[in-house]
Length: 266
Image (cartoon, rainbow, N blue to C red; front, side, top):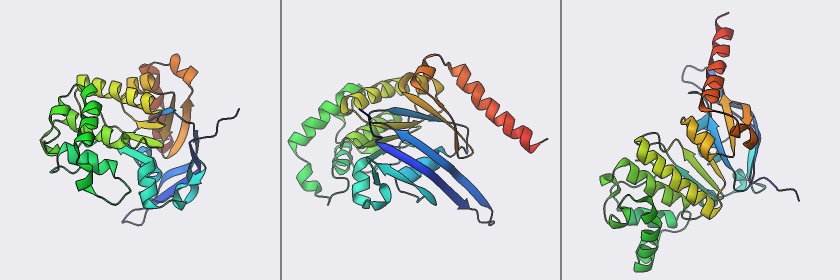
């Protein structure tokens, strides 16, 4: 039986115009099929188009050409509210995606009402509170005892854990992880990644993860997509990942930069 893609990018093209009038291509003819429950790693040097891709996937910026579909439906035919409920995103900056002066509990309840009319008073119940305690305990960051603490008073690791729970509460059809462990110390980053992997498996989430941590790409992803100058230049299959090292990935990225440098400086 053929499995249909959960996410389909078809001939996606995005161009920007700088204040100087210069035209800059952000994404070039991207074609990618992502299947249910796949974890896709996106790697590439700065300016490769990784963040632009995420902003297009969420509908934050429209593509100029091509289409992006979720389960066969174009995201451009969806309402903002519907799209918000189908995509969860965790940002690199722990302050993004949360209301810093609101408590952990209030932020989580806002996330639970994403795409709906906000009836906060009806959500702040004892049952909801207990349910969130059970979701926060496995992170072992003492978050279950900090539900009444404002987000801005948490550590970076605690904030990212809360952001992850917020992004997965509705079990979205697509989870976007945008270098979200980059600002954490190695031990906390490892713990958060392990919990992320468990949540992805528990909720059977289709996930795309931008990362500069090449070991994370190899350890947690089913396929690795390499981007360069707005293009997909290579895709490592699951089988290829098994025989690929971080050194291999690093060298491939270095070679891409060297090839481009040689073109510009013949």
